[in-house]
Length: 456
Image 1 (cartoon, rainbow, N blue to C red):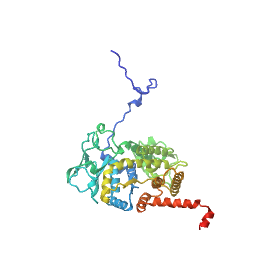
Image 2 (cartoon, helix red, strand yellow; image 1 turned 180 degrees about the vertical axis):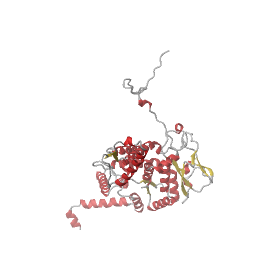
Image 3 (spheres, one colour; image 1 turned 180 degrees about the horizontal axis):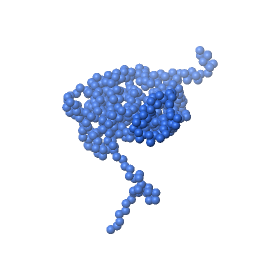
Image 4 (tube, rainbow, N blue to C red; image 1 turned 45 degrees about the horizontal axis):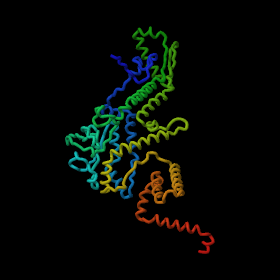
């Protein structure tokens, strides 16, 4: 029989012990340290770093909220409905608890008796949403996963069960819930998941602990910043006498009381007194290095995590904040929007009583531009529109629509799209009239000046 050979994909150096059994690195492996809800709650309540890691992304995702694109009456009705239901606050609470405990949900209360059936937004009448309630995974357990490959909810729980002391167990259809996860688990079959995610603190807890331990050790060094050293001749030999030991302790206590900061110290002629000072150079860099690890683990810029201005020459931190805001924007579009799709449809019906096709929303930007930046953006956009108009390559009707979109998306003229729609409805022939006026002006401009005077 032939010999079996084992092959390994990696660097092996027998002389340097790389990749061999003597290599210390090959014995490293990842072990999952479970984090219970109680541990997560204690960390959130007991350390400021853990609280900030949980609160900051959730707060930034909700604080500037969203803007509706509709006519002014519809916008006012939609915003009033959001305020009545407290949607912004509910979403912030749900996302905070989801990040802390691994999952949470917002229950859409419509007053229906059988909540195990799917929620149909078209059946929601005006003010049909009665309330929104935040439920944590401690009272809302996920059912078995949907394994039907033809189902749009494949791989997700087919139902959820709400457990309460008064109502017992109530089965709720997923369409009646806005489901938010903490840190997503890659595969429920491998992770033996319960239909929820992990706490965000699970992956960053080691970095937070190292930072807290380093801070505590530096804090202990402060008490050792200055140590008094007193040399007493024949101290060890005289300590054999118990009476001398008591007198020595009493003497040192009195000396310490009399000395203070600006007091005097009385010594025997043969005694000497010196001070030893601890060096704190480099400790700030060590502490910042651990905080940077926490910042990277939490995916939050250090300037945002600590609430301080960036250090370094010509360093503004704008790039870090912009990248962070882009990540929050992506989370809003990839997490909030899909999770709230059914709720948003119900919200429109509840606010307006119908579902206009041209009603939609967009998340407001977190980055606040200055007046100079807004003016520059407006001028650049206007110059671009003028350049396109001068080329005559785009029909005026198409260019007008493109210009409205450009000015609206650039934030130069918010609400211009709705205003143009209202103007077009009130003046359907405005483009033809404008074209006739332009042709008449061009004809007058083509007439020589002397002929214009004679005509006049």
